[in-house]
Amino acid sequence: METKKARSRRFLEDFFSKYISGSGIDIGAGNDPLTPDCDKLDLIYGQDADKVISYINNETYFWVYSSHMLEDVNDPNFMIKEWWRILKPGGFLIIFVPSREYFEFKKTLPSLGNSNHKWFFTIDKDEPPCTLGLIPLITRNLDNYEIQYVKLCKEGHGVKFVDNSYIPGGVQPIAWGEFSIEVVVKKLDKPYFYLDRHN
Image 1 (tube, rainbow, N blue to C red):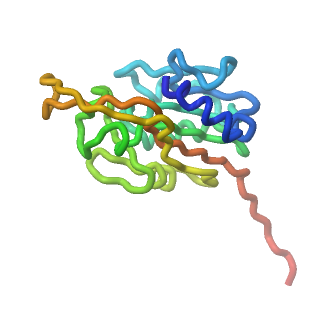
Image 2: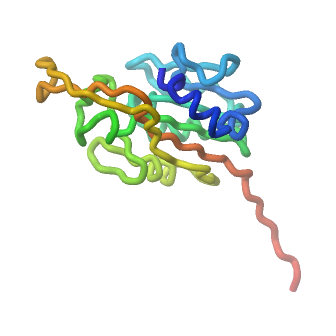
Image 3: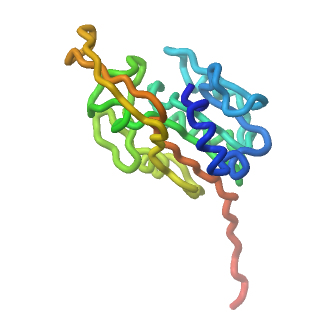
């Protein structure tokens, strides 16, 4: 559903022509894949993520995409490394996660909008115990990369707060439109080193 919401914006931004070519995989696609012909991989809640993705060979795909799934895994550090492992040099890793500011409206778990969420996300800073910054997450887990862009996507965003006695605080935010952070990271070719034999 979140991928579908972003489609018109991405067409206007030439997202598909810039970043989506060749074989790719949508991790967590459900019924809303980025492209109709990409490979799709879904994680079942409670499933061991490393066993699910470990069968995929290194450097298999020209692009790896995941929408609104990273917040549901136990170990986002491990998961992003696995996505990087299966990405070819020159390819793009695209991560789309809910923004804490525009979806969660709070700083600590549990999420009021989705009880499956294990993590909240901001763009640029970690805030323990449960908020991760996407840029720090990339910095500590990936190498040989170049961030193409990272931005807050809030096309058509709106929210209303409704009474709900079943959740802590008794008020639940219901958001619509886009309420996500999007980052595109390019995997650079592996550097090579040579000896300068000149004396």
